[in-house]
Picture (tube, one colour):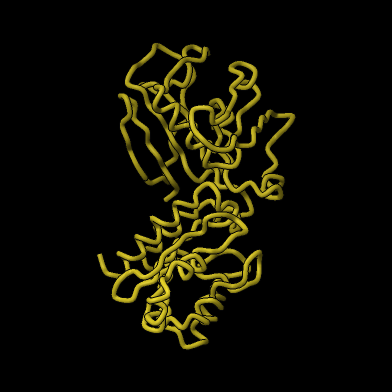
Length: 303
């Protein structure tokens, strides 16, 4: 690991602290280094100071003289426009740091390289693309929302070891108490959750985060008379969507190629029959495989 990668890794650690409250803004971390870390920060809450602002604010008065020799590491390109806060690129220029290291370019239309160009126009050395894939993955919901004008879509189901999601048409417990808690944690991290009418009428799921802490996702129920309106979700600022419906609902998203991530929980037991789980598409990469209480949770994303 290079020194730039080491400090960018710290930016990512800091950025993740904004998971709940930075939305709908991206999660961003910043670290200021002058032989040692003299300041760091992250975007805590939408409408408040960005990561760079908080990093500079954390620099002790006795370390201010080090800024002209310092490098600032930022997981996402500094903004160059006036939004709820002034441009961070302007702040970096005023502070006089000599070098900026950026994890990835901001795909938001108001930025898209303009922040980097503004810094370079002022003679500041800018390095771009350090741990780029990790930085992009951190804000995959934000990027998908702005690039594709739709939410980041997570398909999620639980199945038996032989691939059934129910027991001859009847609902059954597949998740353990711990993996159920993890499902509620996921709900707290996403904007909306969707099921089909049959699942709603048969199981009456609450779709809340009662086993975790946080806001409940917006609850959506669809059927053939009330199909999903992707444009409407985008217009309402929904950046991420969990689909927890039955096999037909899940398969409809797969058929329409409307998905970004698939999460499958597999229990160690088998049953004699039921509704088959959807098939995992071919164009996926395995992000993680974890074991909890005997159940395996696999996460797939598009290649």
